[in-house]
Length: 72
Image (cartoon, one colour):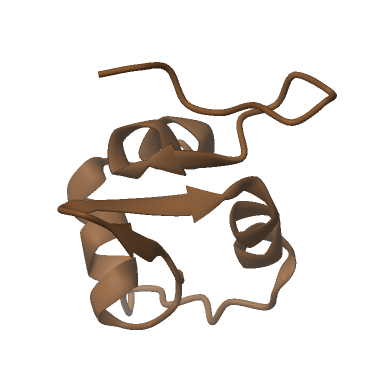
């Protein structure tokens, strides 16, 4: 498999689930959960799901509800 295409600045145009998880600091399973919840939008290319860096940035900058366990 060849390397991912890169923009003129050297950034990849899109990254797969494992790289997206690494960049976000979460597990691949968490990325899969975010996809299922439609919190993170990817694009299917063949069997792979890829994410633009813009999409990862959009996800990080939007408001997210914070859930905390009630203290007993």
